[in-house]
Length: 397
Image (tube, rainbow, N blue to C red; front, side, top):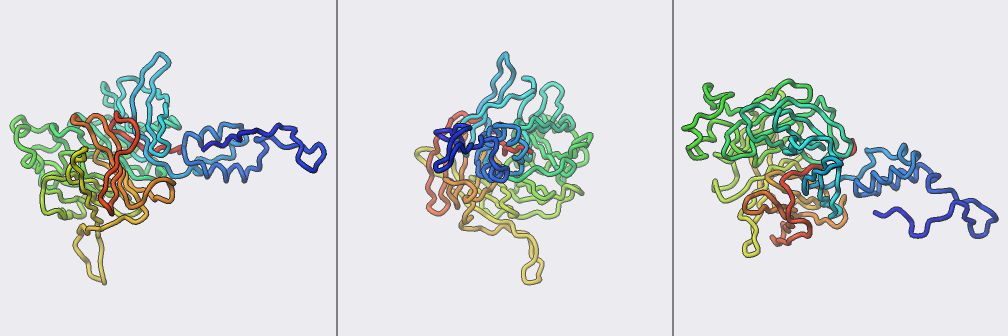
């Protein structure tokens, strides 16, 4: 949003019908008006520039005034003599933004959590949550040795809670290495493993033996809760994870590290689809993508809502119920994770639809597409084709 007028008023302008009336400069605008304008700025980059006009505006604008944001996807990492930089692609503005980062080349961005990037040093395995906009950094314990290729689980939109109430969840990003989910909270000295109740005691906390690494995924997966990072999300202190072997959903209380529910899969088949678990304004959705989109073949999405609780006073078993639409909401799905947004908060975006990414053959770069849930049509979206598989929700607090 351009806030600079095309013809700026001179500071000593004379108003029609008055004599020598002085027009105050932009820095003298009433603070109430400054705050109202700041709440209408959609892009976080423009919001930061707006607060940088003068000291008076900067003190008047609050970070909480920032409008809801869409994800930023990491475009590329750039190293130069001046320092290290991350380039992000904004879904909202379709522009690329460059942000300087203080980390060395040994530090990798391996995911996101809340409104932070999740970073890990390749040499020391030290982890942290890093906000590239505010430069705030929260230290976390080093990743456990049994997770050779860590990847964090993103959270849905919304402000980050107090660090003491955060839960950061990581898993292995490689299908060739089997490791259970782990979680920690800022201030913890180590990560806590989440294992299946049927995991043998002799294998807990250890690498899988050589003979077990050669067997098929169905046999291996019985030794841990998850063997990949597909179909994982967490909300309100609970982790929701789709088991690779049975495709059932485990609901886990992170405070007590106990499995509360195991919800059977709603699909009749075990194969042929990809599972996303998405937090949608208090609801847990299971989005199944059948097929992979190419120019010669479309893909199909089916959406289910998790029902846990009672009906008519009777306690019912947790189950997935298929829904035909998501009304004024749209989903963002990228690299096995996703989140939900309201269309009225983002002019130009369409409700009852899915914005998703498709990777290349090697799964290293992504391109964006749009799916109409009602008509089941797919359109390719403009933008760079070499996006990485990491994203985060920008925030100034």
